[in-house]
Image (tube, rainbow, N blue to C red; front, side, top):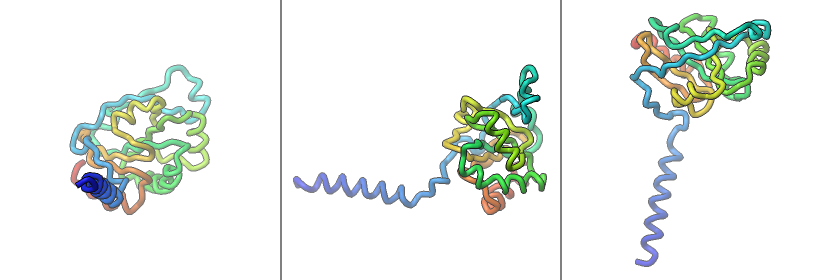
Length: 180
């Protein structure tokens, strides 16, 4: 009996570890699926230093995208996964199948301008979430994360990690027709 309790505790812990090892870390559940996307209104990134020197930066929010589905992609210039997904985002932008809203997450404006100048800009538009509040509202764990928002403003899908053609075809494309 003396050894039974520690063995039982060890067996329970091993069970938890075994379940955890079999889970895909990219499949993080989101309580937002099927619900209205969090409201946001963020400054638009000025793509040149001349634009940045102008008075107050323009701001955009959810209302600007109402009536058509759109992707919200949280990214940053310092993010390795963002570098991986960027060529595919450029392809999506060229195809024009869906509006791609970029939210620059906790990043310096000058850094993201330089990053986009070197790689191209797939976003229409780029919004700035310097303090991370919009990311918190969306439940972002880390960048990159991409959300599909329907024409009526509901979150249809959340993708954690670099967006790939396979993930888009499997998880996003069917929802673009059904949920828009």
